[in-house]
Length: 518
Image (cartoon, rainbow, N blue to C red):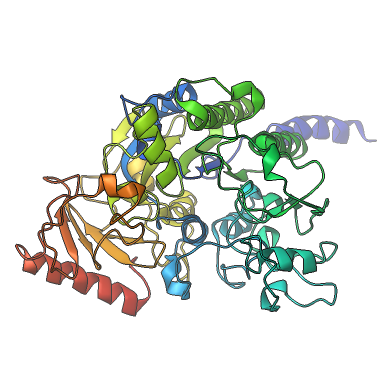
């Protein structure tokens, strides 16, 4: 080889090898907890009985949002909205959650998703953990299982167990995460340790199909252990190891990617099982807290967050990685009932309501952001929603969203980087319950376009203990001023009819127009 050419290559190759990452395209890690309450995390609740040192350190290193909201009060619609920037009620989906082999995918095939957008920008994308946005499995004849009518098998299973038995797990899933913007997926179809299908999915296959009916007699016995439906279990699927398996898969994907393509930005969506019931902490975490089995489970969640952050440090990519930690809705009713009574811990503190409810406790969630060099340690009271991740990530690289994408997504990038003025990021925010009841928040005012919680019943049973007097029992809706009444105790529907009219008008306009973002 020509000596001059060799010298030229010697100068060129090292330059290529150490090319600096584009600061406009940081790595992005989103950690989505399940059913974690605002009051479960120490940095949000000084009275919390659960130590969360890793989450507290994450908060001190970056931004802690105090007015962040899940789009819905339950899993499936919240996850759809996070991944698409669009409220799930706009799909016609009625607000419940998928179970078993339920589907099809709620995300439309032609819809721009958060990972799909980042793929187009050159990101490597991976999802690990709970999917719960719907999938299409097939029978041995190639028929979509969700279109097959099957008889009930009893056991309280409805049709779900029968559908699983009819599913041919050797056939590929046709509309999973790898068809909606992710290069790689490892996880479960629905709730990992609650549902009828206890098996892992990798990309578009179930590598180890379920074969055995769950033996509930071998599961732990405590107040937080009663949510396991009697479905089919795959060999080697251990209920108390799920989150550690997810952690191992995320760590392996990160390590492999950084080794193979150190200059390619990545997006990891890590969706945990914790802290969704049943609370089956791994043996090493059992008894780790004084807050019972559910407290131990949250301690495991905190450990997982710490391990993911440590992995970023070990790989040398933490300084150019935007980390977001949040939850898909508020805490479960069983959790609140027993922890309030047994440990004096309130997972929804200081808010009224729980998972499924339209009151703040059902959808106001922890939201922590660490972005070294870009987001200063701070406490931010701007109202944001999980739908906003799409527009925020698009703004990172000045990528305009098409009109038919991110209909309810607002960028809070300027808030993260400290260049925002005092004006709110969002003109108003929409909320959706398990029953697809809707509410709207603008500034201090919140209007619920329905009676009651919109989710749980507080008229009888264990939740009756937490019922509050209805100050406007004949009102068709509810109006609260969260500044003067953060506990949503006094319904001002009749006292401020002009506010009711304005907010209901905004809500109705948003439904008709199909969007809330401009």
